[in-house]
Image (cartoon, rainbow over the protein chains, first blue to last red):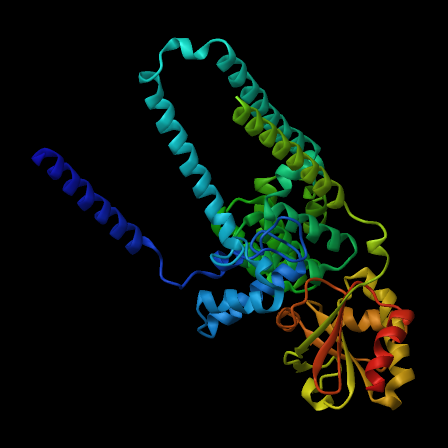
Length: 290
Length: 182
C-alpha cells in the first residue's frame, strides 16, 4: 500500500512537472511575420498558406502582416483582422471554439476509443479460453474483418479518385515556393516585364533568402535598367560564393552599363571562373579579346 | 445474435453512407463550367473599409469624400487579363450614370504606376479615378481574394454588393440602378 502511494505521488509530481514545462514552452504571442503567414490560408490558391504562395494576393497579405507587426499589433489581433475580412476559413488551423472544436475533439475521442479497445483486448485472453474463437464467433469476427477491409478500401479509393492538382507529378517540385516564384518571374521576363519580375523576386526574397532568386533578381534589375540595385544584388550573391560565374557576369555587365572602371576586371574574373560559359564568347567580344 | 446482426448491418450502412457522401463530395468539388461564366455575386451589408491613397495622376484620395454618391470600387491590376475586359465597361458606366451620383474608383493592386497607365492608355480608358495600392494592403483591408473584384458602396457608405470575376454591362445595369434609385 505504502509503495503504491509513493509510486502514485511520484507519478503525480512528474505529471505536474511535465504540465509546467509544456505551459512554459508555449511561446508568447509575438510570432514572426513568417509564422503568421503560415497560419493563414491563401484565399487565391488551392491548399497553400500565405507563407507558401507566390500569388500577388498572398504577397499583399504578407505585406499587411509586416505592416501590422511594425505598428505593434499582437499575433492574435492580426489573425482577428484577417478573420474579420475573410471569415474563420482563412485560418490554416481550425478555430478552438465552435464548429472548429469538432476537428480537435474527434481525433482525441478516436484515440481514446482505440486505447480502450486495446486495453480490453489485452485483458480478454484471460477470460474465456481458446474455444471462444470457433464456430459462430469466428464467422462474426470474419464479418467485422470484411467491414474493416471495406473501410480501408474506401479510403484508398478516395485517395486514388481525388482530383489531382494540375501538373500531376510536378506537384512535388512545385511545393517549393522558390520554384513557383522563379516560374512566375520568368514568365514576366518573357513578356519583357522586368521591373515587375524584379518585384516578384524581391518579395519572395523577403520571405526566403535564396541565391537562385538573387541571381534572377539581379538579371531582371539589369534588364530594367536599375543598375545600382542590380550591382548590389549580384555583389550579395558573391558574398556567399565569390566564384559564382552568373553573379560575376551580372555584376560585370551592370558595372559596364553604368560606366564603372571595375567592369573589365569583374568580367575577366568571370571568364577565368567559367571559360566555357554560354556568355563567355560575347564577354570576350565586349572586352575586345578577339 | 440479433444484436450482433443489427450492429453489423448498422456499421455496413454507415460505411456505405460514407462512400456515397465522399463520392458526392468528389463530384461536386470539380470546377463547374456554368459557375465560371459570370462573376460570383454576394449581397453584403457592412460599412465600407477606409480607402485612402494617391491616384495615378498624383492627387490624394479619400473615399469618405464621395459620401452621398453610389461608388463602385473595382480592384484590378495590369497583370490581370479579365480586368482588361471589364475596365471599358466600368468607364462607360461612369460616363452614363455620373449625373445621377455614381462614381467608379479603380484600386490598382501590386502594380507599377507605369504598367497601370500603359494598360489604361492601351484600352483607351479615361476618366477613371485610379488609386494605387502598390503593396496590396488596401485590397486586403477590403477583404479582396483576387482580381478582379468589385464592391458597390451605397450613398450611406455601406458595401451592398460584392462580385468576384469580371463584371459586364448587364451586371452593372442590374446591380447599380437599384442603388442609384434608393
